Image (cartoon, rainbow, N blue to C red; front, side, top):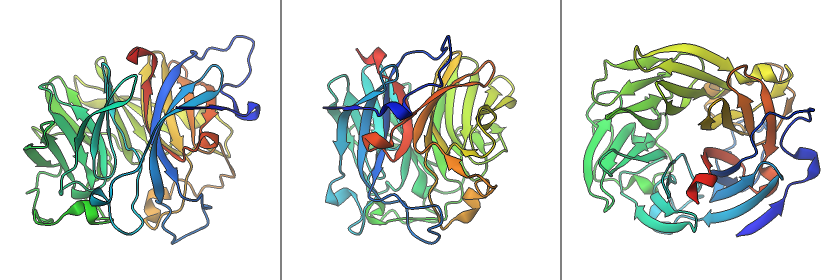
Length: 350
């Protein structure tokens, strides 16, 4: 483990006589990029992450401890410029469920002992993993537009196409998709899986909604920009949209009842970044923002090209859900983290 001191000029919080943000220790998971590239680098492949990182942030002192630096083995990654990083996960008890592009890993905390490892040929561009109510694993297999339920030994229980189609209509069960660099364009791009009671759901990036995996007629239309996180808290589900909004949906009638625009808490020309990673401790919410980088799928970044001139870089922001006010930002790029996918409370793992 390596402790790193945050430069004083980019510490958490905007000074005030009585700061409201909670002092918190957070695990933040994501990836380290090979080289940062400017937004103007149109046509270049910016998605070049060389390792997954798990940091522990002390938001009071502005320090970070590196717990895990992970590189996927050659048999679980494309041979040419593999994209290696941690995607979204779930913390339950003392187990942190995480995924890379092609692997599911379960770490036992606080020692970060690897308790479970699964990598299947059908895995491509995984985005999220969480446990099921019965103790299995539920995985957003984004590259194949599916959600996969499997046991910890890797045996498959069910494969569900999030559009209701045959899971193998567009793909071949004979192909090792771990070695395929990309299957884009995706038709749905499921990002996050969650449960409403015992009913599994998934967010769909392209459809800008969340849909039941049991009954596709049950969905939560979100609209706005493309959807990433879906997190159940009480009787509501909280969704991030990539342009910095949080949509709050009532799970009783499956409709959005509030939209919190986090960009309004900052100067009009400030670019927060790609919103992804969400942790709620009512009335506070922690949100991850990753530096915007070029992409050949330019339609995904249309909301960026609006005269924005400044950005915070890759950072974690804290907000008050009652009024949408910003309580501070902590830049994580000095600690080697180039993209954030998940934020989890470190205190509860002790």
